[in-house]
Length: 205
Ligand code: GRF
Image (cartoon, rainbow, N blue to C red; front, side):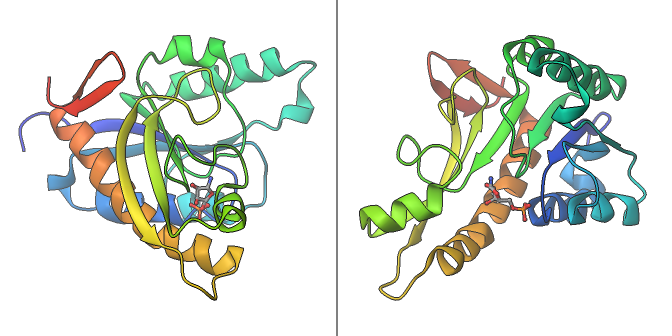
């Protein structure tokens, strides 16, 4: 592959299985990604342990340690910027980053949401899809904007809802497809770049 790998900072809040999929993919130099740091909004989570086991630097910025949400947002952006990322990936990061954060990394923050946008935004995507009775749902990778799961869509993957699904079984099946899509999307972003015209995203410059 020509050129240096893209520098990626990943932010997590939980188990970090999406992060692990990225860590595993990045072991192959042809993937084109180097995960330079993993950040979190809470300590003691499996996501941070996964990074530590892989020898990746970590940092933690809990909202409660700051006098305002804006101060937290600035501190988080400062920590991320230290690692000079080409791309920031929110992989199960359960906080909204603010306008100040997004200005620091314009069009370079990706998030993954376990529903087919624009349906079921917010924290309860799988539960809301199940309650609504949809027959298919899935996951969406998008470029983060100032809304809640509203940014330009980079990729989507579809998952069947089964008759006997509960929220956990559905979310777990979504996550299998989500990890595959996230790995594919981050790799293509790193190797090809993206172009956004209006809301339409395509790979390539
Ligand atoms: C993913 O489904 C993500 O979309 C959602 O939370 C889950 C995180 O899973 N926001 P993990 O921490 O990567 O295992």
